[in-house]
Length: 166
Image 1 (tube, rainbow, N blue to C red):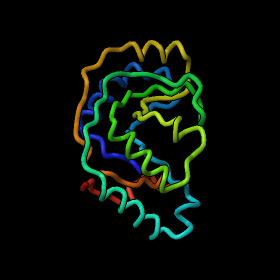
Image 2 (tube, rainbow, N blue to C red):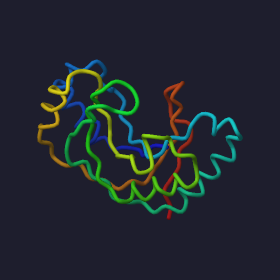
Image 3 (cartoon, helix red, strand yellow):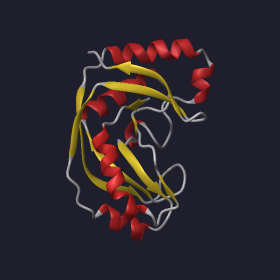
Image 4 (cartoon, one colour):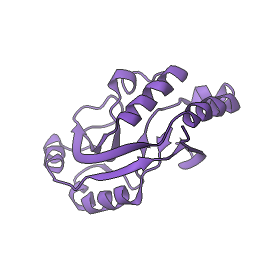
């Protein structure tokens, strides 16, 4: 389950793109993952999963989100590192993540107490390059999260869209 990010975040990522060329993979499409829902959970009755997800999101009020810097995971629990990302600050995201972790199984090493909200920019390469990019000053981007979506990793497209209603 992802939050929709505003065009200002895409523009920021585009401005940072030239400094990301030393990395093995540079993200062209940017997402803000709040909770992973494993494929096996969907196959156990997708309609039930959607309704549970809709109920949680219908009870969630829109909330403020702020991107205020760049950071990196030197040794991520999944995939090649380092992972360079936009740092996201939002108590609302943290609260929503906790509620979703009560409703759906937690993905070990990535969620629960290990969850760090972020927007991935690039991965694979050197820690020195990650440190260089992380030292880049950026203008903060702030918005109110009002919409969420589910993402089909295999087909690389949004599947369901939800409004935060509260």
